[in-house]
Image (cartoon, rainbow, N blue to C red; front, side, top):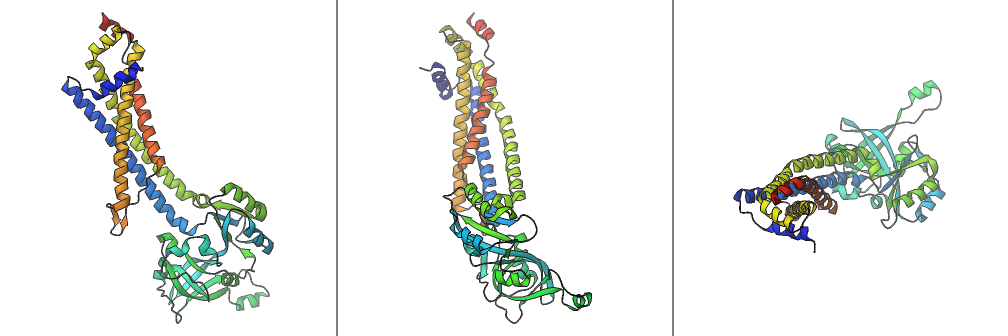
Length: 405
């Protein structure tokens, strides 16, 4: 029988004869519960915000993307294209060609990016899910633009009488200086809006989409020249193994990047904010758990007679320390579990009912994850062990000898 653990459980359930000690114990337990619940709720809130922020970039970004190692474009031969279709772990892939262009419509103009994509683009990315007006139809020199571009240029869907003009600088002129000055220094393309997408403000003002051959003709590129390859990966395969296969096929002309690598700044910012919040709340918990030290010391003083009896019955001072150490650990662990349970109920109600709103139609994003559950419990238990160790160290042999005498 584990005597220190048995006694610690009895002390945890029993009440003291001193009302002040009972109040201190109740306040200490409440602080642990509230602190652990608050930490869990805040971490769940940041997890939700992180997922919400990344959902914007995930609409555009594929699982894996090949970009030129240098320059703006690289060449994908027909043999390489056929070989990519046979690689294991790739569900689909699509080619794209992107360039900065000048857009003008009804005496309004702006700088944006045109992205020429092939027919597999909607199977590889989730861009079609972001279209809220019209449809993602790029055939017959049609385009899909962001709501920011459509608003700034006053564009309308299927307006064949007033198409959008796209101007791209020519890659280079040949001939004499006289010929170069007489030639138009840019290529021009007219497209009609078939759809409008909405993701977030920056992306909504950045891109228009149209067919890949149309953009290749506008930029005077041949059919093998592209600026990117987008891959949708099979989750049953490891990303690293698929990357090695693609790298071996495409060679050193390209760099492969996943979503995290394509958005390093965004990931770094979100992770830094999450860590800073965790550290701040952990500091608050450290201060709050000083109550545990005080509560255990008050228990030691209140149970002086018990110490004397237990010592006379043969328990050593180390075993008596262990009694109060285990009492503190049990107290913080139980408070942490109850606090996390309350946090789960609160976060779960937000997920189910969306009672806290950012806008009239958008609930505050939260996420329930095992990671946050483990982080909170581990933090509470470790801090509880530290506080219990400090408090139980007050039991020294000198005190016990004086009590026994």
